[in-house]
Length: 591
Image (cartoon, rainbow, N blue to C red; front, side, top):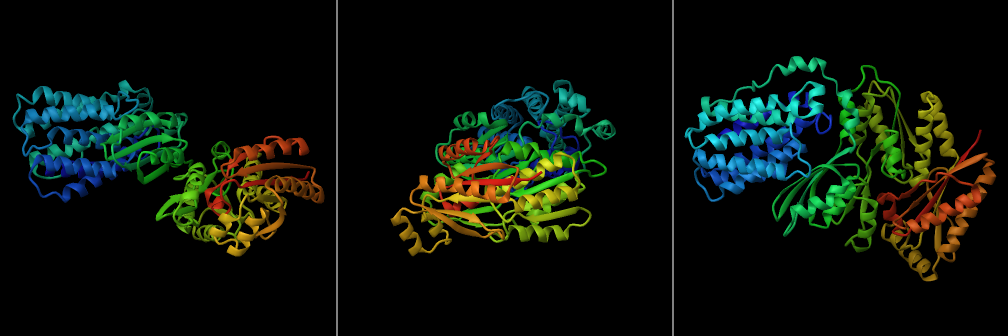
């Protein structure tokens, strides 16, 4: 059994390119083969460490390694299959074919139960029909090689019929990629049992011809949830049903597998940070991944000739998620280091969760900018579909983010990349990126868009009211004596960023309300001195939406402001100011 599973896993790994090419369900992101290969590689690594000849030990190793390494929808389903197999064979040193039939049937049922919304015409269907045939014939066929050889024909037939059961497969002219991966796994096992060798897979080669008429573009509308999100949850007394119920509102393709001490969770969602935050209530969350399926889909459907302008920023840019998604803005995350663990800003840790954690951390969190390689990967991805890339980032006086973006841009040839220092942060950076997106939407040239951005950088200002100096002291931005005196006197500093992007104290309020009123007067003075014909505004807050709404109402009354974006501020920036901070940004506009 061990050697057969190793052979099957190797065969599956060899077929990842073919499976990626026909991947259209549940989303056409072209990575089912990669995910199944990663799962199979984990199984191989686990089985390679097993020296026992007992079936139970082999099944345990396959189940545990599949659980730890499962990737993607089909990979997690396959991992649950091995979990079910392990449950049924515990304590057994050997299996006969009848016991094997009962075990695989139980495993197939377990795979189906792991999904919140199982669909026919997928790997689940092939698993069930194959296992049902094995179970019904296992008593009469006592030779494993013969049993699996005959069952392979059943699996292939079930695979061939998947387009009849799932409309998206029929329209695309392909079979289900996950189901085909399982058939390849069986092929490798059968080939080993019959020959003792591993040969290349031979199933459904006619699909290569059919792929000539296959178009990913037909399926763009199927990506309702952008991020393929998965992780491990470790704890005591974990309840799969409760976890599944709590997550169901956050997306689809939800799969929860594992046991009372360890769960593997997979979900397609638009809010990966909310998923991780919710799961954190159940136990320790590790092996976090949030892969952008829309970007994967765009890579698979990239035009022959790149066109248009791509827009990139970093996670300190405070803009509503809906705006970022609508305009296809790529966000490169900074990193938060909290009590020995690292989190990608906004992707693996939401602002809400961070601001709740911050008062209780053992040591004050630190932050780090994205590496040049992080930017390079994004520029390469955007450059495949866009003839030019504009990248706008946090003030270089506050972080090395801008410099790393410049370094990455210099190493990439063939794509025009303009990297700009916003000289600001947070919601003010958001207003600049918003201006860039609107200019691109209007069909302006690259040079015209860059001119608009540079004017926006010159004509913006941000004012930040700190309710306390405690977090500025902890982060090292303010000296301890100054912080103690300021807090004792109840002073509320108002910060702004200078024209070269440095943070400075511009005023103080005798109370927080006084400081907020002063802020609005400074906004008014800025607009008057700039002689702008109109303006746009934005508000960012550190988990105090009621203060943000006060600002919005005041901006409407004083400046007739409309469509003011309100965003919970980036944890990377809020780390230095603390919960309760509010910032208002203004962008002056001319004719």
